[in-house]
Length: 275
Length: 281
Image (cartoon, rainbow over all chains, first blue to last red; front, side, top):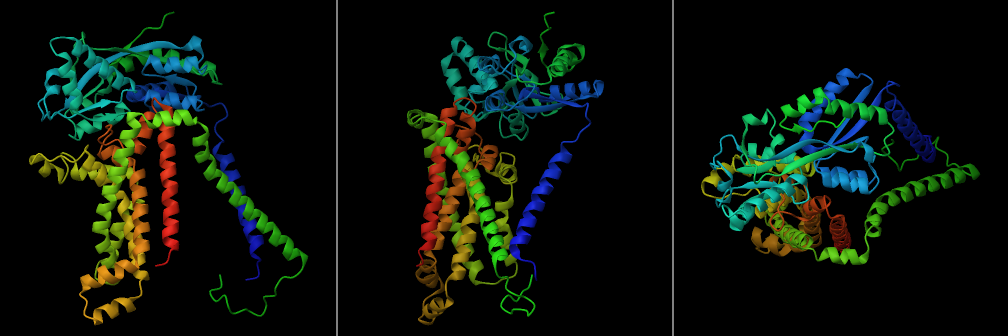
């Protein structure tokens, strides 16, 4: 052993650094004309936007659609803290508005593009025998809702408030339902598994959250229009986005016939673009 | 590498003079730079927590019900789960430290498993076992006992992930106890139980306490298994890490305040363990 330790150590360090640099350079090498659009999308649009992204990529070989799904809240916080997507698709106007007020959005591109409403879902085997809204107040029924800060949790509370204001149900009903809540989730995506596992008996979700595949595992119960809350989803391009033209083209696709067909299939009500 | 470091082979000559000194100084500089960079990397994010919130906002947030609920629930559940870990883990650690039996290696591996399992795996595994339709849970459910999404689930999740920290430390402490004392007690007619309680455990005391503190800290920080198995409900299953995750969605001040409280507790825990393990009993 003749090698002096300091020299080997320095050499080793240099090799590691060099290796990292090489790795960094090679991974960044892509087809030069390919653009990646990063789209921050509300979790409730996971299924629909995955399909739309694939359809768009099939038609436009030079664009890669990189979808990031999370609660609208979490996505908004990430953007406020420095994340740089090209497009933000929110499940509530509140978070879009907050980003607009902060100067993060290109205001001219922000528009509501679809509507959604609340529904009740129960597991397919429905062991707790929940057949309507009234059953939710039964003691021992296990209910999952969203936290008050996430859109679908906020809308759930609005539905319950509307029912509390109606003598047919009254405030006691709302309190009994809230008493039965076993967990408050921050994203719709973590609600359905709790039902399919049979850990919960019912959940308030967006109508669109029940995908075609889910309908084998859960049953959807409509919330009557007089108690329901209509949610509007806005989307828009970030002020800092370097891919303005590509982003506009993708949004046009989402709001065009192909995108609308996919969104309708998933239970959303597309709002036609004002042209 | 040469495995006999003390036998100098004849062709090794000690490097002398300026060159060696320069390379040694260079090495010292390199090490210092690496250490400084790393320390900066660890302290900067933690310090940033304190810089992003005013003291008034911090105190105001501490009085929020969501913060108080999470703090009291976390401290209570982590205390209970640590007690459970100590009660079940001490005999196991003692047996594994003092007796060789067929399958000991398997028992050791099993007790260490939760350290390497991702918390999400622990969460889904607990749900499959104790959920309403779980392997065990379905029978409990027939007696009207449900565990998932209750405070009990929080404690189970914590016990599951925190137990190895105590058991490993306890076993090492027991192994460090000189058998002479135990043999002396035995020859004087003490029963095995008495030997354990009056000789082995008191001699390993420092290590046991520091193991329990580590376990407590791990329980306090548990997030992944809890949110899957116990859910997120303020005052019932929303521990501090869950409350941080939830308040991030709306009230950033509350999230930062909770994070600061956790940092302070974690720091105190490390300091306590250092003091405990340095004090040789």
